[in-house]
Image 1: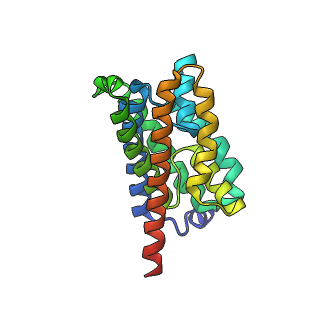
Image 2: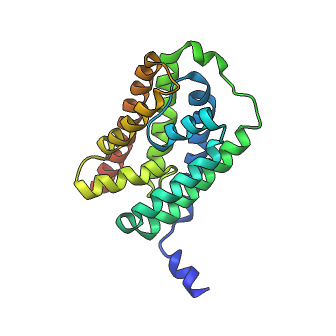
Length: 208
């Protein structure tokens, strides 16, 4: 009991709730926008969609597995509180996605509107991920990886995201036409900038 209390010391229930809701928001966007529009994401999110296409494995499963691996890589850099908050975020994302898969997607017409899908998808990913990161966690493993790269090399987190995102976008050319990858690049850049903006807002508040 004492060891559990020690482990949870400093963990804020309100932060856990906000992080869990951000995981739901992110899962909603990935399922209803990215998975049907032919506009993918970078990092682990994009890798989830790639594996779903080629091997029919649900992102609810792959995200949890890859996130655990990346959290293991990043735990020394990011610490106990980050791992706990990230576990909440990843569990919320995977559980939400598993539930959403039981229902039809809301906007199948987005396949014919790739630019709209790119912008809408960026909002879901940028806000869902950015809020979780601002609270000290990460719903997907690439968030942990990007934050580790950011701290280790002293670069802004949005540029660390861009490095990992570009790698997955290149792999996504195996199933997405080049024209759609252009829209995917738009959503990746926009979502990364939204994440960075949310981080900057948080830093500004700290300075007041």
